Image (cartoon, rainbow, N blue to C red; front, side, top):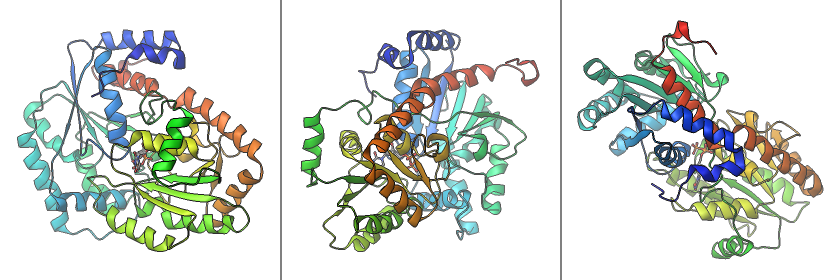
Length: 409
Ligand code: UDP
């Protein structure tokens, strides 16, 4: 946890009255404990958000804790397949896979200390812990960070039996949700402008990171930051870059890493390296976890930031890019269109050729790129800063104690 976090530091970004409202809402939760459970402390968007949200809520006086479930490699292989299938990708999932999922949940429910009034369970991996509710009661919320609007039906039916036992579900957008017989709330994710990932950096600090990775400082830099995952389409990014680099001198950086709950990433990294071959303008960087300053510096050094995913959750990388006032070229999937308003806060694409066309537009007209970036930063300030997500959660936690039919908004 970061002892330096201070809620007051957010006043210049969102205004004093916003922070006062957070304090007022937090005070109403005094005496209650909220326990977050997900599957990893590092790697990926959920860990990224929790690592800032938890200390900030503590600072506001709410007793918020964070634990992870443990599992063997085969459990994470199964959850990766479930994740892909919930995103609508075809996967072969056996009855044994479902058993591994259930056994791991069962073991974790014996090991985890569930002390807390509100159990805030993130994503499918720990969803089956809900079985514990019949013993211990309490309020249970399922926080779904992925887009499950077009899932593989068999996998969704399997997961749904757990979700319907929760008191409520939270989705990032109505477009990501499913019909459920429980209460649903909507809260888009957010970024922390003061974290190492997003804070201002000096020119020297940015240059030092470029030098560390052997990047040419003089050439326009196109960047995609993503775990090495096929759904992030790194090969599509390389193809789009190859189309553009015929006419524009530029370099591509694919900066990624692995998450401990993602067993496929090593294989994908290898594929990407092979596809990049010996092109001196394509840099495939395997970035160790917790290299937030490095990622921040690469994003700040970029001329254009891409996110050419085939499927997405919210895509925090977009909010991070926009906060740095960068023009983005990104696929119109998942939460990306919430952040990229086409031709206003970035450019949306639907294919490799579309991505290449958008890249050319910005490379040929840097003023247009800067204008998109400035708009994007303001869009993030208004909608996707962490204080907004904190406010949403505080309201959801408070609402749980009220009957649905007596809430008036
Ligand atoms: N990220 C990182 N290092 C990497 C790759 C990704 O720190 O090598 C971060 C990225 O900056 C973002 C998060 O991981 O904060 C990824 O979140 P996103 O919602 O974009 O994608 P997810 O990985 O959850 O699918």
